[in-house]
Length: 141
Image 1 (cartoon, rainbow, N blue to C red):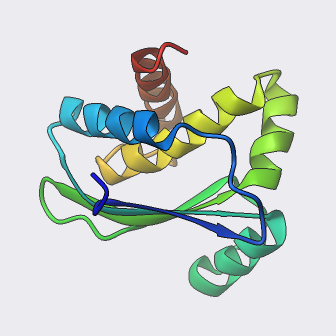
Image 2: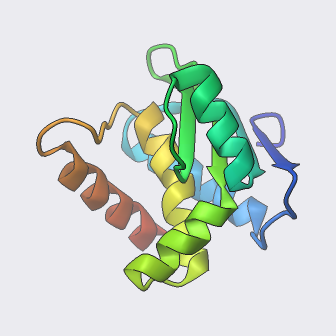
Image 3: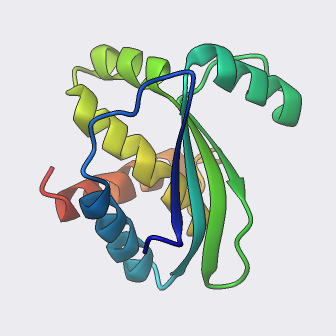
């Protein structure tokens, strides 16, 4: 799986993650959704960087925890995922979740988008949250 995943830090320290465990988990979640892993790049950044990306590529002027760029084709999922560790931390405090659980939720959130699960339309947020919870249980969270 070494050729599939890239883990990049832009202006932040690498979060404490067992990358081998996370990569196997992501593969299991993708397989559950009948998808095959292609190149996946995670870019950990701060709020300033994610706001810049949000403005430049999506014309959105707000902070978010993750922005997923989807390059998937058919069953092969591929994408770049920018994750603001600042927003993950503030969201974890807001919802009363440990930071490491919230970070894993956001990591898998991007993969679920690549698997075709949306969260913007009516009822879609509840479906996404249910899928995130099922995925976290696969990791014993």
